[in-house]
Length: 331
Ligand code: PMV
Image 1 (cartoon, rainbow, N blue to C red):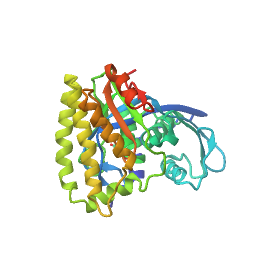
Image 2: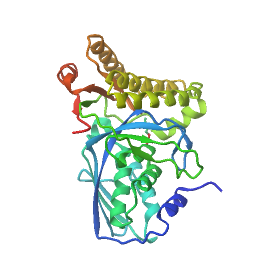
Image 3: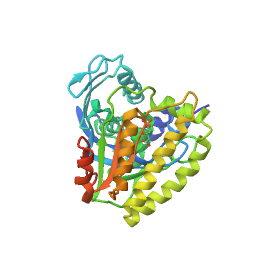
């Protein structure tokens, strides 16, 4: 019988006595992958085909207050009550089903994104990570970070990395139950590193990452090359981080994002997240680099751009990209 999400929750929580508190508050940072997670080997448990490596966005993420009560689940996001029929609420409530202390128990959730949601950077990573961190406090489970990472992964793959700050590696693992598929932080920090969030469009994406990954794995002839590319890029990125070699880091991260998008574009029907404006910004990054400013980019399942550069080049980058929101991940 295939392993279900509920089986894993039971396994992780086995022997834990719930010690319920009235309410609990938690925070989880968003993260941006330098080496991407693209493709699952198990869709129920969000087990990835490859490992991945991200950088945390520090104070940009999700805060949430959880309590048990009421006669149905309710969620407010940035002060607005979310209609329970919305896909976001449905996905959250289905995740909460895994953790109800009794069949009739309901959750009251008050969440706030410190990352601009409307600007197209809404993050399921910080969202599902904060749920798990808040439930850990609400129920007094006292789980270790590895267990928290496994539970967050059940909500959204990239959420496994949002349990930590700094550089984080999510180990793909090989076991069918995914108990060896969790994230861990790297020891290194890099205070001079900067990210620039460049909004191209806040509009709804044509296809969600879950469906897009599935289609890529099933139909893209380029997907066969992806695991090899990831293995090489992961080794490069870790070496670049150890050596504080920014150009090596930037080049590898940009090339990894481009290769991921190439696998999608070759799927059928094609998965194209880029908008014409994305391409304009991609060209602008290359042009600035040609002028001698070491700036690189990465992109996720959407049209927006994330710039990578060092503190010393922040002024040059801000001049070329006046609307970019600059983040110091290690501040
Ligand atoms: O965790 P998901 O299902 O939202 O997938 C995230 C996929 C990418 O953002 C494109 C890559 C990544 O590693 O975060």
